[in-house]
Amino acid sequence: MKTRLFYTTGKEDILEMNWDKPEPTANQIEVKNILTGVCRSDIDMYRGDFHLPSRLMQGHEGLGQVTKVGKECIGWNVKEGDFVATRGEPSFADYYNAEAETFVVVPDADPKYIIEPVACAINLFESVRFAIEWNDDILILGTGFLARVLYETIRHAELNENNIVVVGNANKAYWRKQDVELYASLEQVHKNKGAYNYIFDLSDKPEYMTGSLDHIADCATIILAAEKHPAFVLPMGPLLWKSAQILMPSPRSELFIDAMEEAVCNIADGIIDPSSMWTRGYDRETEVKAAFEDGLNRTEGYQRGYIRW
Image (cartoon, rainbow, N blue to C red; front, side, top):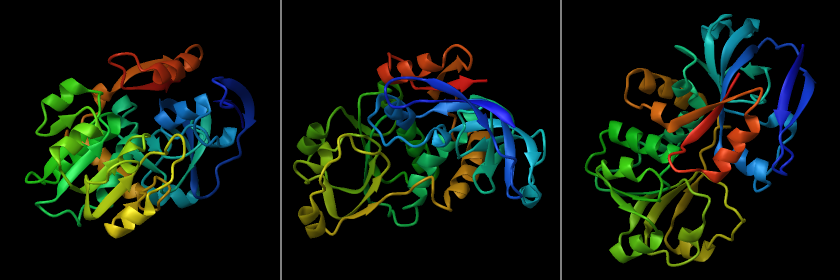
């Protein structure tokens, strides 16, 4: 079918094309787009600071309505008319296909059910859930959307005895209400002389790897969730001496669907409420560029934006 698709070339531009979308295969569904989140990586692509995939690989935080179901997807308890959240591309198109194990059925087309970014945070935690011990110290680098969901997921796992320290400057009002130590910079963490067993790296800044590594405990685990800009060289010698391990849980993992399903349940049960984190919807016809510009400039109070079809 013929459908529209917008994309960027990395020059702070938004272009549009007519796309001859293929029919869904037996293990795919066809989705009519309703909402798509604008991820930080999308904004970095727009700016030219992130690896730029093809135009058919842009947009990955989709939420839409099923219009066709491949015969092998019937076992996923999905039918035409259902609302689904997707982890796949190109969700910057009016219609797109989603493969089995990259989508979950959601109750309605509410922004809080844009599941992919919520599942990203849950996936980070699940990568180490059963390794964290009650007295381990946890450092979260970042205070935005992923950090909030990650923190709420950790607390729901009843790791209440763990010391959690957070570094960042966003959402200060939220973090001041939580049972955490909040620092504006890693230098303040160093002054506190803490060494952390688990470091969740949600920031694109590599400073915690370029100076003193006193904050990294022996046998620590570093969970990476952000590409660095610019690329930096890992201090392999000191990390090897500390016997640190680095994990890179990805939405491309075959286990990511488990995190998506957990995200739906946690939102429906009120364990996680991302509603306040989606601060503005932008009209597909007139405001797509504004969505990217606001995400780039991040005015006060801005969390995440989404495109509304």
